[in-house]
Amino acid sequence: MFRTALIAAALCLAGPAAEAQVAGDRVEVNGMQMYYEVSGEGDPLVVLHGAYMNIPTMGAIIPMLARTHKVYALELQGHGRTTDIDRPITYPNLADDVAAFMDAVGIGKADVFGYSMGAAAGLQLAIRHPEKVDQLAAASVAYDFQGWQPAFRAFIPQMTVEMFTGMPLFAEEYRRLAADPAGFPALVEKLIALEKEPMAWEEEVKALKAPVLIIAGDADVATLEHSVAMFRLLGGGEMGDMGKPLAQSRLAVMPATSHTAVIMQPDLLLTFIEPFLKGETPKGMFP
Image 1 (cartoon, helix red, strand yellow):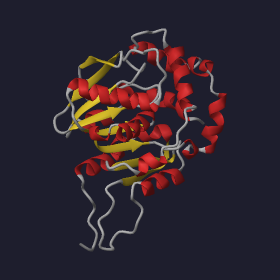
Image 2 (cartoon, rainbow, N blue to C red; image 1 turned 90 degrees about the vertical axis):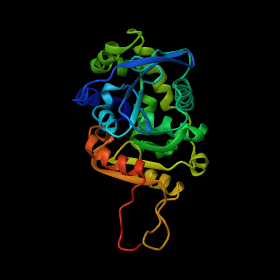
Image 3 (spheres, rainbow, N blue to C red; image 1 turned 60 degrees about the horizontal axis):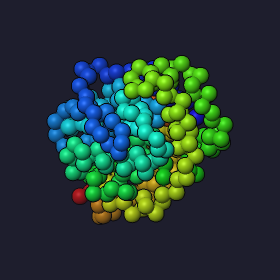
Image 4 (cartoon, helix red, strand yellow; image 1 turned 45 degrees about the vertical axis):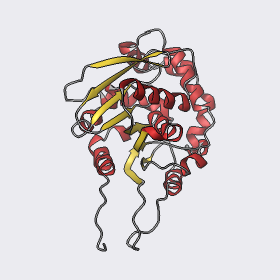
């Protein structure tokens, strides 16, 4: 199975969170009208959704995070209620959009939580605009094309627009919110092109100063080996209890978890994200 098609299951199953929905707003960002919602109180936390998704389909994790943070949930280019523009969807473009959004609403620096496409956009935000990112929690992310599962890499050349427009759930969810109800084929074309974009960010990841929490399912779209390699690039993976402080970056692996099942487990996600954002470290036997 492949990453983007499996999002269809998440669109159906995640649904709106049980808690009351928050009224949103729009702001002009790089020529588009970007839709966003603000909820909660506390330090700012920007939340970025995956491909073919929107704020509601991120499910319960947003209102759960809003219990302790001021959450800014965005809908990225062409997704949800945000308009599309005549420009490719690339991870650098998405990152620049998030930075411009933060400027537009007066956020100097924030924590970031991203899932899938949103996680890669968050990673590029930390690379391209390091002054904007305090800490990054990135679920289901890769920094190199070779980090995707072989089955997914083999499937990318077979993707077609018709494959996605023929999935009623995709098209119906898009039309439900979209500013241009007829714009789904154009969005699909851009997202297929995104899968083919070169990814080779090893040196940039290694140079990151912001702490990163990598969250991966043990049956995710990125290989476990790739997630571990990324953790090591960020200074993690050495033995603790040896008198040196642990790396600020962290790695969390969710058991029995496919790509779309990552976002379907908000309680488990929260147990990883909250201690990371608070800088809490489990206590060992040695000081």
